[in-house]
Image (cartoon, rainbow, N blue to C red; front, side):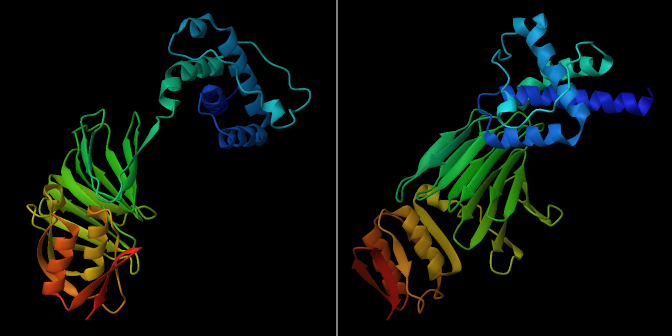
Length: 325
């Protein structure tokens, strides 16, 4: 057997062992079974390696004695697809299968899927969460985000949400946030992310973050303290501007600071801050506002906006609607 053939056998053996581990996991899904079946169908050598890995797992005293390895039976793929005929099991331990055993032992814990934890807040509610790595999240009202603390990375997904992050430093496990069409990557820093229906805003309060395109990772911007980026879904541009770190996350202290922002954005913020939703009529959506709003009482905040802008508020069963006077 040539050296290339030996290397290929070892790679197949390691892949087979990884599939055995994955199919034993508590959270194995139909998609996993489909993927395993497709892998088996690619090459008869895959089936032989899988059969050997499965048999070695079940027969090995080393594996049976390990308390951190599950002892449940492997899912029977024959119930999911018709097994090939005439493919017997080989039980000889060759170098390739030694690699398979090592993969089963050492890759097993790595392949276990970390649980996804979902955090949600109702409009008018805020919540502070401390993750198991020490990172701290302050979540604004009307927000939903999910957190998955994996061995090699910490992953957050945000959709229609706002939160500040104070990320614990861990150079070996980056903190990634998927928000809209962008990904924010950090190691340890503090920043605020606001995701609305049509744009994403990231403001850095401390340290450095990188914001990239999910589909085109090479398209990215690097932000330092006192900088922010806004990405509009409509034109897909990333616009970097200075930001006042004292006001970038002012909502955590019960106020909002604006510098020439459209009324539609302010209404979305108020819908997070209070239980009653605020909407804007098309003829008033692009009115601009600069100033600081104290978020003490919804009626009082609306009254202040009516004094500063040519608008009137109408209250109904669907909430508050702002229209041009």
